[in-house]
Amino acid sequence: MKQLEVNIMGQSYMLGCPEGGEARLLNVVGRVDDAMCKIREAGKVRSRDRIAVLAALNLAFDTPEQAATPMPDALSTAQSTTEDTIKLKHLLQRLDAALNSDDSLI
Image 1 (cartoon, rainbow, N blue to C red):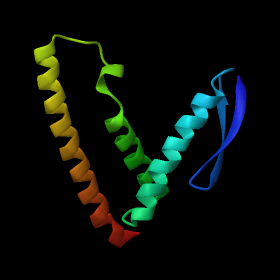
Image 2: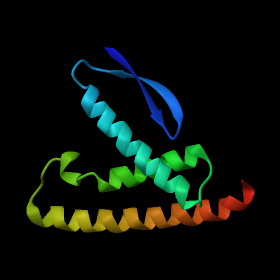
Image 3: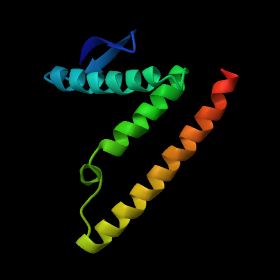
Image 4: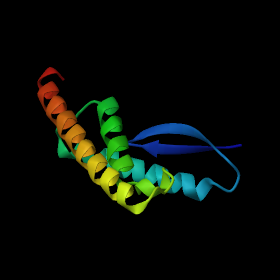
């Protein structure tokens, strides 16, 4: 396994990478770095941990659901996708509210 040094939000990390996976890993690191920097630049969240969690949720939300789950029948897929989207939006709203109220503590 190859080791790559990458930077995310100005901090260096050594990551293991399978041979031939360097371009894919660098692409993913770029997406994570962009997501985290956007959250930090918005100014609402200062904690690196919280920025990482929000970035992970945002990236997971943007990932097509079909890549992670097998394909059931079309009707149940449409219903579960809509329900999951609503649940995830509510969760993100609750996280934003909690993080906004936590800003006064940081």
